[in-house]
Every structure is written in C-alpha cells, then in structure tokens.
Length: 578
Image (cartoon, rainbow, N blue to C red):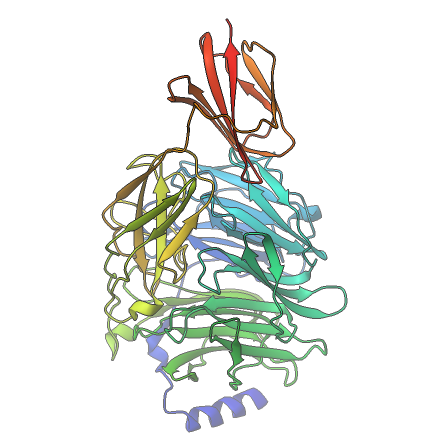
C-alpha cells in the first residue's frame, strides 16, 4: 500500500510520465530467473540479437539458456551450457573467427569455463589458463594491453584477477597489487580518454564495501585517489550521459550499513567527478542500464532493485532532460530485485526495448521483455550514424596510434558518439582487433558501446612487423552502428638484419634441425624467423613454450627476431642444418 501511495503522489507531481501503451509486454516464453546474468549477442550471425540467460529458476534450481531470436520471436536453441546462478556469462569473440564465444564464471565449485563457438555449436576449451574462483565470480572482457585481443578481469570470493590473452586461446595471470573483492562489479573504461582501458570495481574487500579505480599507465595499473562511497551487491555502468565526450558513471548497491544508494557521477575531467545528488530510486541487489529510450540524442536510465529503508522493490525508467536532470517517466513495469536488466533493440525497429529479469514482489523469478512503442507517438525511429572519415596513422617503431575525425548522427551529438575499431592482417580478416560486427554492412553482433569508447584515437602496442588493414565504425546512443569507414592500411618494418643488439637470449641446438629452443631472461611476446635477406618466413605469436618447431625450414642461415614482454627486441643469427 505504501508503495502505491508513493507512486500515485509522484505521478501527480510529474508531468513527464509516459503512457502505459508505450512499453508493451511481449509474450516470449523466456524462462524467469533471479540472481541472474544476461547478455545479448548475435551468436549465429543472422542479423538479430540472441539472448544468453542464466540464473535461479526457483528456490532450489538454476539453469542457463541461449535463446535464438528469429525476427523478434524467441525459441530455446537447445544448446547445452552449464547451469549457473549468481555468476556471469558474457559474449566475446576471443579467437577472432567472427563469431561470439562465451565465458562463464561462478559455476559449480566456482568453475570458470570458456566455450568456443564453431558455426553455432559450442564446445568447452579446457585449457584456457583462467583459474576457478568463487561461485559469485563476475567477469568483464577488455583489451587492457592494447595488443588487439580480449583480456579478462574477474572478481569473487575476495579475489580479483586479470588474465592477459597470450594468443592461441591461452591466458596468463597479470600480476599486480590489486584488491580482492566479493559481491563485486567490474567495468573496463577509458575514463580519462588516453587511449587505453582503465579498471573500475566495487564490492566488499573484507573490511566493507569499497570502490576502486585503477588507471592504466605505461608502468602498469596505478590506484587512483578518487574516493567514492563504497557499495556492493549492486551495479555500475559507464556512459556519456551529458554528451561532453567523456564517460560518466551510475552506481547502485548497499553501503556499509546495508542502506541502498543510486548515485550518478559526472566526469568533469582531470580525475574530477561530481555527485549529482539526485533523488533517484535507492536500489540495492540491483541492476542499471543506459540507453536512449526516446531517441532524442541523450542517454536515459532503466533501474531495478530494492529500497532497503522502505522495503519497496521497484523498476523505473528515468528520462534524461539535460542539464544533469533525470525524471521518472515510466514505473509500471515488473518490479524486481536480485536482478539483471538491459535496454536492447531486440526487434531491429530503431529503438531500445527494456528487458527485466529477477525476483518479483511475490518472491518468484521472472523474465519480462517490453516493446518500446515510443516512435509511434512523439518520437522517431533511430537511424544509423555516418561512418568516420579522415583516418590517420602514426607509426613509431612497433607502436601505432590510429585516429579519425568525429562522425555525425541524426540525434546523438558528435562529442558523445562511440567508435568501434577493427585491425587485421588482410583486408577481409580483421584478426588483430576484432570488431564483433559485420565489416561489410556494419551489423553489430553485440549491444554495447564501441571498443574505443568516445576516444577518436587508439594506441596499439608492440605490433609485429608487417602490413595491417584497419577501419572504424560509429556507434550512437541507441547502439546502432554505421557502416565501417573506407579501409586504410599501414606497414611496420623495423627489422634490420645487419644489426644485432646486445644478446641476452641463447638459441640452441647449434646448428638447429627440426626445433629451436630460446632461453631468455624475460617472457617472450612473439618470435619471428627471417631469411638472411630480411624476408619473414615464420612467426610464433605469444608462445606458451620456449621450444619452436622449425621442421619446415630448409638448411641455411636465418635471424630470429625476439620480442619480449618488457618491450626489448633482440635479433639473433642461427643456422639450420638438415
């Protein structure tokens, strides 16, 4: 009763409420879940977004599903993946083969499992190197080292790990002094627009709920002094709500006294953030999602969760009016806690639709999808943005800076557009930075910001000699993508067979026959084999062993160019005798 009275009074005082028919419940047959994880992605590359869904289906059972989206109608794909509750399941093209793979964390006994997509069928990759953690472990993909492949951060059971992708589906633990968390949320973000991903996280660190922001620097991750209220058992989402070109933040969850909070922080640059102090729904055991529900060019909010002080479970959509003001415009959706929510254009009609999973007010798990019908009233259908132009390349040794001019969109301001970069070793194989989008028509396989965020330049580090091809795509606030820009190329050529640096590695046997062993005082990033005239004939990318197969190399004199993790490079001559 108290909730109903509060909502009636708020509605009378607020002229911005949207009509009930503007969000129409859809009968989908999707299983209701709570303590849930959801991710949308086009795993079968048919042009619409499918659903990866995990969680509890009653008080004692859990399950996981992949639902196939057939032109807005959903059916269980029947693909078998492990049951999971309280963990996370996320799409990502980890092997660069132009389809979406799955990483699942928090499985039975805290297992972490990588599933590879092979033409729509999924198989477990048993030796990824990513360790098992707790049953409440969460994960987040991101290329923190700017080498073009997806790394991953995980937190749970008072452990936080970052795993660096070494190539060939092998990951190694990236070692630095990072706080272990439980009941956590992790998000990669380039909050300072310097062309690399920083790590934000919140959760319980053993002493209480805390927030941490680690800045990515050339010397490694450095903890910032940004001091936000500590929260746990909630959510955290970055987006540029004020269209000024940098990423702002919404956070929700419990504080140290188990009081719920929802806070929006405006990023003012120079590591300064302002708490807007808005009277938003206080939400713990909660979830939040940004999206432009009315296609007016700024980001609105969907929030679900529990107000601990008043006992109310609520779901609200807040419309962004500009000037740091958000007003409730819709509050008639299913109220949930222990939830996961999203704003996604599941029906490809040009607007984002709310999807809500969690425990409802009667204690039952639910999954409800609503069709956004706003474009039939005062709002318009979202159109694709324009592709970026004026692509530029700056090469310095084996490091590259790629940049481009701002694109345009019908409503999203150019300062707030995000960008999706792809880089590859041939014009049709973008295998270095995988865009998770169709490079021909720009159709996106996921519903997220672009991989460079709002940055219009991006760094690539320690790139091997060779010719590379690249293009970039624009993403607007409705997560629609442009076609990719006209492709460009660049060449890195640092090999000089006449020059041999001070040798710190040993190559044996001498002469070599079918294998070559490299003994080094540093971990190896890659090894290239060159002829005496300087032609590269073989490359070993991110080797997991120091033993290299050269059985296909003929008798002769060669150079091994050795790239090390500390960025040192060695050129060593050796002989092959068959």
